[in-house]
Amino acid sequence: MGNYSRRRFLQGSLAIVAGNVLPCAAMAADNPPLWIPPLTSVGRGSPILLNARNVKKAFDNNKVDAWGFNGSYLGPTIKMKQNDFLRLTYRNNLTESIAINIQGLQANGEISGSINRNLAPNSSWSPIIQIKQSASTCWYHSDTIGRSAYQTYRGLVGMWIIEDEESKKNLLPNKYGENDIPLILQDISLNYNGQQVFNLEKNAFLGKQLFVNGQCNPFINVARGFIRLRLLNASVSRSYYLHFDNQQPFFKIASGLGFLSQPQEQKALLLVPGERVEILVDANQNKPLRLLAGNSANIIDKVRGWLGISDHLENNLVVELRPQGLASAFAQQKPTLPDAKLGLPLSPQKERHIHLSTQDAMINQRRFDPRRIDIFAQLNSVERWILTADQATGFQLQGAKFLIEQQNGERNKKEMLAWTDTVWVEGEIRILVQFDNPSSNSYPFIFGASNLLLSDKGCMGLLVVQ
Image (cartoon, rainbow, N blue to C red):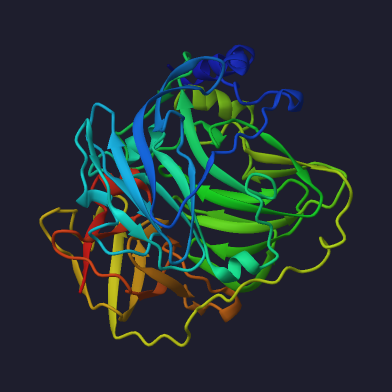
């Protein structure tokens, strides 16, 4: 098709495509209420089942086949306390093998799951998991070698919340689903039957529509005052630039594995694949607050997306918060946070250089080999890892945690530090990695790209801590 005919086609298709590719772009009155994954609070040896199986899910108006846990698309939110333990049973009722990872869990390699525990169809595995770490927001998802992106995309995703004594005593919002709200972000492409479409050919997958907790353009009624949002980027490859439509500032209070030493007021944040961040927003007002993910596509971009030549999201509303009730007298006060437990200063015993190649899916010029251990680290040690990449991408590791020491030569201030396991690598990033959990040749940890499709293609390595 020549340039002229393509241009005429685009112009002539606007009205048709606008009606066909905008299932998420409904008027505000048609927005669905935000679905909150059911909360499962466990401890003291309580048993819990995560049953991976086919489910029915309506992404638009048609119920189609998807995957999930315990009968629903996306799994329950599991909540535990520090020093508690549970018996967790993974059961695979799908037709292909799966492996499940609890990203952020600070446990030894033998019980952390991941690629070490591949479950064939109709099989199960029941580890006993003890929680040692401080307050955290983790998540569980597929980590099957070569299939983690596809299986996570289909719906094998859930949030895992850990509390400790300090976080429980703190006055931060803690009513799950009311003022402590989980938001699981996914970008998904649908065909005309409302079924998920996935492309394995490239090293990244960018879906056309933004879904939050499995819904498009959701709203939630909230009490006036501070609202705590637990943000999880469960997308395969897409990062999100999050901000409110009125440019209202918010407080960043925590990364995935710990609180900041003090709230950081900001107007936007970048959320990379696999990353979890907690923010507080003041909803002590009369107008709805709309949390957005960058800019939505204009009509030309939407048509180009329909043709497969645009990476823009058709919709960019994460959630609309609709304040209700009387104003809160406490909302104007700056929140206080539990101890960040940074343990500074950290003295690294070793320095390593890690280069991610997004073009050929390798780390330090080597593609993933399940028979090769790439890094041996000493238990209870600290190392400095210097991260670079040929193109900006996310980095993640299992079984350990780190502080972001420097970004492109600029040292992070103490008040900006929080324990995490995920970071955006653009330029040179220096992290201080703390190894508190052992792993072995038989049950190693994984490190590498947080872009699941890039990881599936080989941009990851194996880590043994002894």
